[in-house]
Structure formats: structure tokens, C-alpha cells
Length: 86
Image 1 (cartoon, helix red, strand yellow):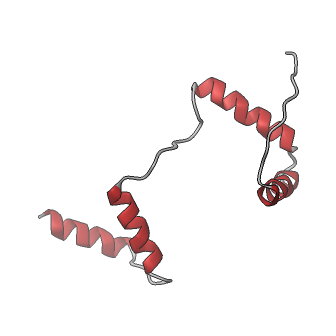
Image 2 (cartoon, rainbow, N blue to C red):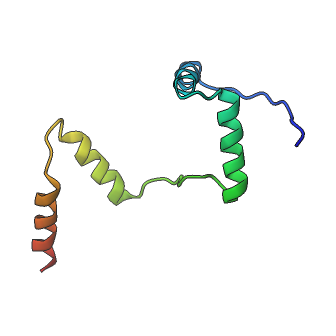
């Protein structure tokens, strides 16, 4: 398969961090970009979901950020959901 060269503009800090992470796992930045590109071809689109969150999701995200270290256990959440469902 023939290769082509391209130029892209990236945020420098993110680029450096990504290169360090990829180096740690034994992959070059070029290899990662090629893998990403191949996945776009195989999936016929982005290989992950990319969408704008709806109002309900945005509200949940804000509530999660407002917890400021507080949390609810999953079992408690399930019990709360079950109680509301009945």
C-alpha cells in the first residue's frame, strides 16, 4: 500500500502528552494516526460516538461536577431507581 504525507495542526501540549503515552505503550504517533485512519475506513465513520449531549445529559454532568467528591453507591442508586419505578 502506498503512503502519503500530510500536515496537521494540533494543540502542542496535547500532542506532546499523546506522544509520551504512545511511546510508553510502544507505538509511534504515526502508527496511532494510521490506526485511527484505518478504523475510520473500517467503521465508515468515527470509531467512537461523537455527539453533543442533550439537556438531560448536560444536567446530569453538571450534577456530577457539583458533587465535589461526594458520591452515591451504585446499589443505592439501583434501590432509588427501583423505588421510583414502582
